[in-house]
Image (cartoon, rainbow, N blue to C red; front, top):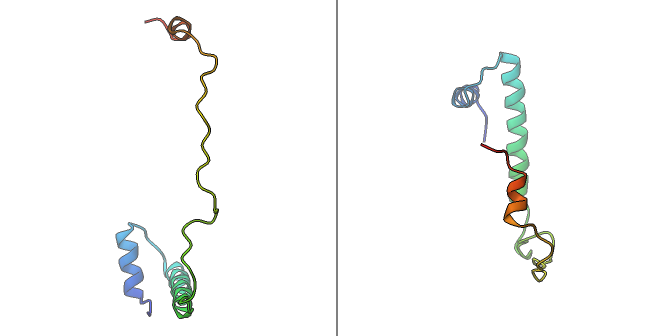
Length: 83
C-alpha cells in the first residue's frame, strides 16, 4: 500500500492536527515503514503454530477469604468530617 500526500492530509484533518511539509514527509516515511513491516508479517507461515492466548501459562490463583481484624461503624465514622 502506497501512502500518498492526500492520505497524510486526510489523516491530519481527521485527527485535527497540522503538519508542515517536512513533518508530512517524515510521517509518510514512518507509515510506509510500518505498513511494510506488517506486510512482512503477512508473509510468515504460521500454519503449524498454535495460537497464543496468554503469555503466562498460569490461571488465576485464588486464596480462601479470611475475615481478619475490622473496625466498627463508629470507629470508621470517627475519621469522617463533621457536617
